[in-house]
Image 1 (spheres, rainbow, N blue to C red):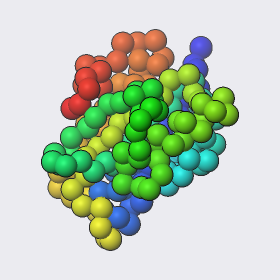
Image 2 (cartoon, rainbow, N blue to C red; image 1 turned 180 degrees about the vertical axis):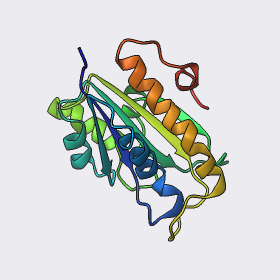
Image 3 (cartoon, helix red, strand yellow; image 1 turned 90 degrees about the vertical axis):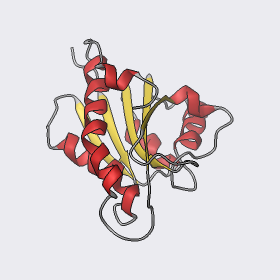
Image 4 (cartoon, helix red, strand yellow; image 1 turned 30 degrees about the horizontal axis):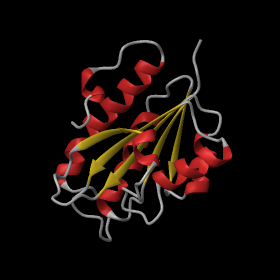
Amino acid sequence: MTRPAVVIGIGNPFRRDDGIGPEVAAQIQGRRLPGVRVVVADGEPAGLLEAWEGADLAVVVDAIQRVPAAPGSIHRLMGSQLETGCTAASSHGLGVPDAIRLGRALERLPRQLVVLAVEGADTGPGTGLSGAVAAAVPRAVAAVMAELSGHQGRPPRSAASSAST
């Protein structure tokens, strides 16, 4: 039996690399996977709670900014890793850690929450992903597919089971 899953692409495609989440979400949506909802969100906590409501698995794809940066690197994090002592890791003011804390308080978390955080190079105004982040899109899509595959009872591919890709 298929358990419900949701893929949430967080970001703003008008802020260059911040558009990685919506781009990956669009590619997953194009596959028309049974039992998988695809949502594009701006990262606002109440919207994330609504997006993952009723899901057994939520896979969130978002851009992050790190120093020093390795643009295009993908980091796999479990929701529990972001819940305590973490502020927004995304390029947004509030984000997934805030939504997790709110979801826990309201008992509105999916059974499993996986965040695929893609390091960005440029989140300034404009459209189009930087070269390194555009090159990461196929790997991010593969990582989402591996999470979904593992969720359906098949072992996930090794690319998604590592801490970073």
